[in-house]
Image 1 (cartoon, rainbow, N blue to C red):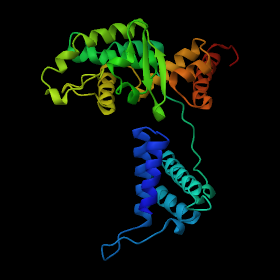
Image 2: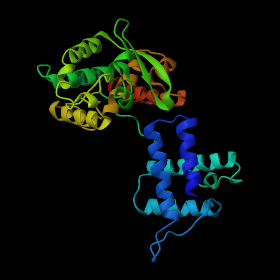
Image 3: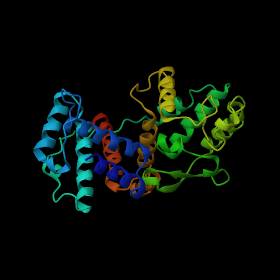
Image 4: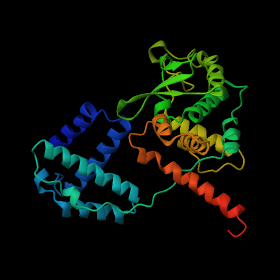
Length: 306
């Protein structure tokens, strides 16, 4: 069974070109399922299980165990989706005849509307970093760029200098499944970016030449490419400094704010889909619910008989 799992992960990586993040999720989900199937016995050996021993009852038993462990429904649904994709691959390869995961119902999940900032809060939050410091210049550029482009944090940290067209204010973004798209940005983001680049070399001065990330746009204090986790910590820091801003805001919230504010200003949904890099329009349509929620609030507040 381990060999089939390896073949599947190789298929995802080399043929489907899934992102590193997606690949890690698949690997983690399937490793947990494998551990459930092959518990360590008293003699220290694992129980042997073949791929043909797995049926829908086995999968239901695993999901029940996850539910009993108080795992989130979204997490359980993702793990089931991973198994469905695995068995779909094995069917195409002629290893199995049916997909047992298809016979298991997905947990019902309440669709949560994405958290976003108002325009006023977005401006206040983005302007929180202290531009008198090098780190402040970097952080301001990151926040301005996230809000101006709506790109994912994982896409932002992968940006290289060559990806940015400064003259035309365009950036080439590599998204999920390594699909590339061109996204415009505004003058404020450009000025913040130029301010950061004017001090960027200070982050490289104390870094050994063999460890420098010369092409990376955004660096940490060690002179290497900044990580998504570091951006998350940075956002948490400024949330605490910025009074009255929703404490549940995350780096991804700037992406949600970008989409919501464009839609509220009359942008076409398909144009927003293209900017966000969504494969399906249905993914982008959640922002219509966010806007409708705002419309209903205005209606309740303004209509005499509401």
